[in-house]
Image (cartoon, rainbow, N blue to C red):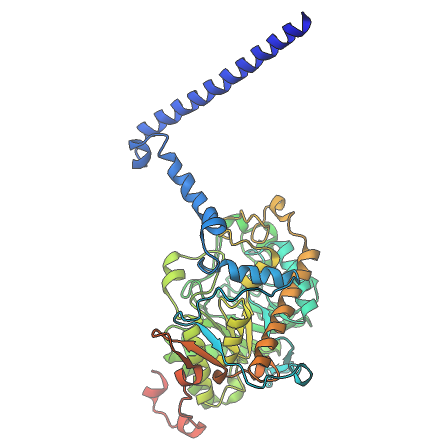
Length: 512
């Protein structure tokens, strides 16, 4: 019977295929067994051949399973699921209400409790936030419209479609976009957003062949109308005392041309600006950039040894208010980055929660708080965190990772490997295909506008008309004993110092 022969032939083929597969697996296992017992670099594999290989696999998979199955909504670091989900819903313009009560532990040390007013602000009495002027002594001061903006993320650390999405989204939301230290690319300008040009320690984009500041390049960038301000980066949160790190795999010909560096070689920035080694030299550099560009110039820094902030204020008083940086961006030691040594990312630099009030208090002490605008940056991605920073005295808040989440970041922690599965921090064209700049630009704008709306909700609950009116008296911070204390009691005003007292300070006091 033909059908019988066909069945037997089929069974024979299946049997042969099965035996081939089993035999191949056995041969592979024998090969791995031989390799494992003869190698001498891995003790586990040598003592437990083949089986020991599963340790690496399970370690890698553990990161995935903890994120999606085992970690509670408020447990995971650096950002937990509740925080990431809030950003995702805001970016999608989805319903951001929740039911049945808070999952946040409101008695944990450091928890924020905003003090609601018995007579909250009615919607019809709310006030629109007025633009804040930055750089009144500049030829081209900047009237910043948004209290919430995009922090520095370089083209190189981020992919082309990610930068394009952020640029277009920033224009739609009316916020500014910081270039990060990788230089100004065409993709930053594409959307028409206001741009803050960051000058890192390697001077990418504005450097000469020796890596020094090139005034002609600086002047050319300043001539671009979209470029509103310049920011000298002294340090950043995840790696204070260490320059930017861009792995060689990410230094494509295009990125190398924008930065002015060799292709496919690690891009390592100096630990600091070589020409800035003191407070007077810092003010000299700020004055130089401001004079060449005609635009507001400030600094970005992480606070560690904060005595220099007082010295900075005294030096400004001695030179006059026009010498001051137009803004100071305070980054927390818990800030993020694409690549940083673990020793720095875990252990160096004060958190923003401690450093921001310290800097604001020094500026207020010397009467410089209206002259020097304060920008808070560092792990502020939810309305409560941003509102706290405004209460502490910040004029603006920047975030990088919040906007990365709005682009679709899943916290895969692959930013430094060029294998980002969402296409945000990779230059692999196949992985970039999943990131549609037009679609993601809308999500970026939604996140920014959603944040501002919820800030207004908190402000109105506290009885003020707009977020910029929030003050320290509007938030309480839970202490170790479970009791909350008003922030204005934790950080009372420092005794004021007038200009005469500051100028009369002895040389020893001026440099401590």
